[in-house]
Length: 146
Image (cartoon, rainbow, N blue to C red):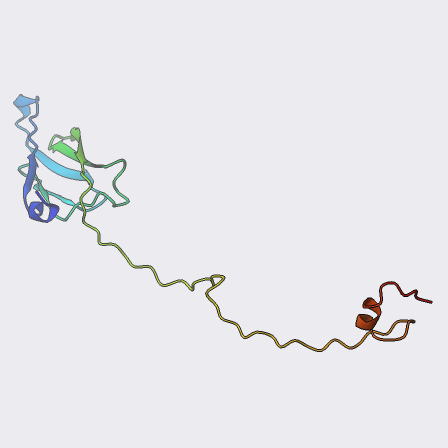
C-alpha cells in the first residue's frame, strides 16, 4: 500500500482502563510527541489516525523508525498518567524524483582543442670570435677557433 492511500486512515486504537474502579474516573488520551505532525489522536476514544504522509527521509525518522508518544490521563484529583511509545517502521519507497544538478564547466581535454600553430621567429645570427654565423661555424667542426 502506498503512503498517500494511508492518509486519513485508522492506524491503531488505544484503550486504557483505570484500576481505581471505585472512583469512577474517565480516561482521556493526549499526543505527547509527534514531531513530524503525521498523526491525529481522538482524545475521547484513543483512535490514532494518519493525518499527513510519512516519509522515511524525514529528519524525524531515525534508522527507518518514527516514534510517537501517547498518554492516557485519568481525571482524578491528582491525575495519573499511562504512557505508550508507538514505533512505526517505515519502508523505503521510490517517492523522490532525481534532481538535476546545474551544469559544471567542462575542463579542456588535450587533443580536442585546435590551436593555431605559432609562426617560427627568425633567430638572429649569433656571432662568435670566429668569423661567420653559428651555423657556419658548426659546419666547420675541424676548424680551430682562436
